[in-house]
Image (cartoon, rainbow, N blue to C red; front, side):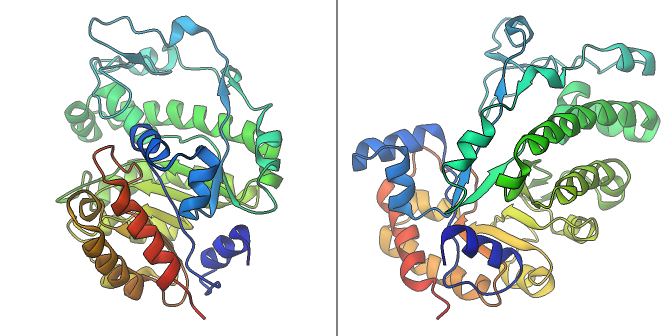
Length: 349
């Protein structure tokens, strides 16, 4: 099997020749690994044995929209939220925290025309025959709404002014729906998986109750799942933390895959997840990133084998770290130990 066939077989909950491999890494770790191994981007992907490649649209909108205006801000999102920095930063303002319905409607929402998709076909064609292609906008609508309203304020308004929360979700998801429709009209025939990200969990469980999740979030997740399916794509959600209570609802709306599965968080017991949902949703990740940071190569190898034994049977599993961004402080030798172990012990026959 080639990489594309391997991944799509796993998504059908059948056993491929070996478990597919995924590597999500921070730019800092990726640069360190390339320096350490003397490889370029494609060389490092091949050394790891990554079965995926990803294509991105480009922002071509007005620059003044994304230039920070608040002192101390490093970036301004398309939705007007000033952030202390792009990665692991925090919002410095909440533009719609006290907005009325009319103010929500009249807010300066981003224009889907600012996203250029003209490069995507050429980028995807480079890898289409060999690798599983990830595409679509990241679409972090949960985070955007939370930052526009403020976290505590958003949860309060879910009870006191639900129409405000609904209106903000509608605008944010409407933007992402339009952008992704542009991408898929351009190149859905060359894309395999619509990959989106919304962190709904913490170490101690979901950020939101199942009841509120179903009321406010799930309908919009379903919009994006249905959009991907309408173009014949599998849909995979990145979601950090413990969110086991929300998985049944995600399965109900047809979500095809979950990434990155953090076993150190409450409710994310791998044996239970595999037993209860393994035949209905693909799990991607599950090898604890803390093992990669603090362990030895021998420890990482042993733990990786344990995870493979639990998650591989019956297909429906992609092996990789339990966090989308392998952090810079992670030893390169531990990451290689993980992937080399997967390639040695991840064969089905």
